[in-house]
Length: 144
Image (cartoon, rainbow, N blue to C red):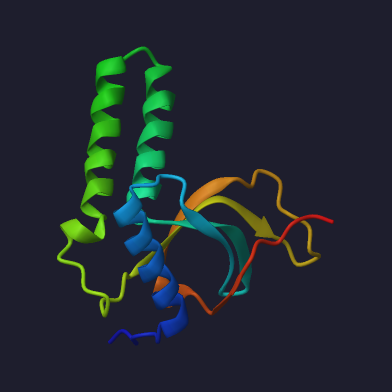
């Protein structure tokens, strides 16, 4: 039997506000800096809406696959993730403000090591279940 983890209601509220503003403005670059604590790992990046996350994912991988010469297959792949992103707009989900968004989407993520240094190769995008988040702070950790 799986144990349901409690999701921080403040974090849920921040994601709901993010989704609502993103949906109303259709701004692909809207988001806020956040640092998450996940099972002993520190992730620091920019929280964005699910729609923005999937659009960026689609664009990145479409470019990647186009490099192999099959632009039609690359476009098909990208389009499938753009459609997934459109489905993440609150207006397409029958979204209610009381709904738990379920996931947080971060772009340009840095992983902070135990000694405070940023891990090499950071800059990835992550989709994470909210129930996995142990804690958070608004703001991004950066090198001094």
